[in-house]
Length: 126
Length: 126
DNA sequence: CTAACCTACAACCAAATGGTTGTAGATCAG
DNA sequence: CTGATCTACAACCATTTGGTTGTAGGTTAG
Image: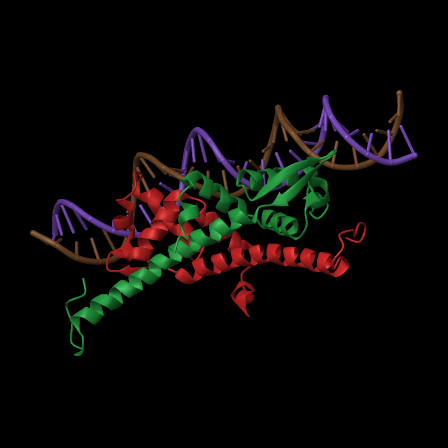
C-alpha cells in the first residue's frame, strides 16, 4: 500500500497551513460552499455577517493552504475547491490513527508470544 | 451508513479546537509520540528544544481538543492519546470530500438525463 | 462616458498564540 | 529530613489572527 506517498511531499509548514485553515468555522463553511458549487468571492461573502474584506482574507487563508484555488473570470474571482488537499489531510490523520493500531497489535503480539496460555509475564515489556 | 453519526455531537468550537491543535508540528509530534507509547509530560518534553512549560502548554492544547487525556501516576502525569477524536476529524474531512463527489455525480446525472443517447445538449447546464 | 460592481490591499485594533522565566506545591529517593 | 524531580501556574513579551474601515483600480451595464 502506498497510502503515505502523497504525504511525503508535504512539509510541516504546509500541513500547518492546512489544519490552521480548517480551524475556523467560517472557513470550513466557505470550503463547503465552494465544494458544492464554484462561486465568486463576493457571492460567497453574502452568506456571512462580516465584511467583504474579512471573507476575502478567509479565502486567502484557504488558498495558501491549497484547499481552494482562484480563477479570474471577468471582474470576478471564482473560487474552486481542491479536494486533493482535503483528501491528503484526511489520509494524514488516518496515518496517525494507524500508529495506534500498530501499537495495539504490537502489544497483542508480545502478550501472545510470551503467554500462549498462562498469564504471568511481568518484567518482559520494554 | 452512519458515518456522520459521531460528527453530529461536535460543536463548531470543538472542531475548531481539534484542527487548531493539529496545526502545529510540535503538537502533531507529541500526539504521534503518545500514540506510540503513553508517556509523562516531562518524558515528552525531553524530545523538544523548548522549555518544559512550553511543552506543557502544547499538551494542554491537545487535551482541550480531546486528542489526549492526562492521568496522574504518582508525581508524574501520563499522557494518553485518544484515537477516537482523531478518527472523528478524519471522518469529518471525508464528509467534506463526499460533497465533492456528490456534486460530480449530480452533474453527471443531469448530463446523463438530458442526453440518454445523443450528444448535443448545449445550453442546458446552468 | 458614467455609475455600479468586484476585487486588492493597506492601516489599524483587540484578542489569541507560542514562547520565555520564575515561583510554588507534591512526590519520590537516599 | 533533604534534595531532586515532576507538575502547575502566573506574568510577561513578540507575533499572528480575525476583524474593521478606507482607498484605489479594473470590469461590466446602461
